[in-house]
Length: 338
Image (cartoon, rainbow, N blue to C red):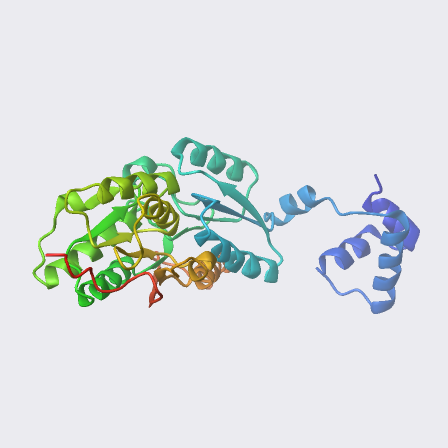
């Protein structure tokens, strides 16, 4: 494999001149730079990325750990991070945990062995799962979408409480009183916050909380389907169902169709997380849209601010506002409902 020595010989310059040209670490005249570039092409030289990273103490790579690559929520979020990373000359290593804590820990060990300069992650575990796992002095860490209260790290999240409250208040204004909720994984922060918003909306109207109308879908399509079937088989089924993420909403709509119900004539449906297919569903789904691209971009901005030293001190939390997107899947409850 050609080395920097071969380039120097072919260009008739010193090794220091070749190094300065490649790394732009010192002034080299345009004429010499051109000679070096021609020599690099002539001998087909490729810089040793590992050696360069050890010398610079930077691998120019970031780690990104997400919890469910099948969830379309992450598509625009990843793009936002990738665009910022590419603009800074960084590569991105993407890891998918499938909501498994042990798989997440294996990826964390892998990324540390690869000496990534920083890490962005949507954690799969609960607060106690990370005790002592992120010692001080490690590479900068930014939580995205979810956060772990016991870990002092920057975070970019949305107002889950406000978003959930907004959509449930909308259903209440339509006249619904039996509003069910299909909730996500019980240990993650987004689930807690969206349930809180659901409760707040009901309490504000003096509407009692019915435990029978809350079912766990574990943030998965099949979980949403099974939770929806249980709700639709109640002797007094709900007139509206709120799924706290988009993949559970897909399972919910499958159950509605299998039960022969019409939406929104027999049942109104809404969910947290907008996604591309929501506007082509029949009916088109009412959703709480998150600014996913901005979430990714802002998480990367926070990480680079730590890496570049423009941000120091206590962890920062950026909270973005979601928006209610009203489509066709919600209407007033059936008249025969008591």
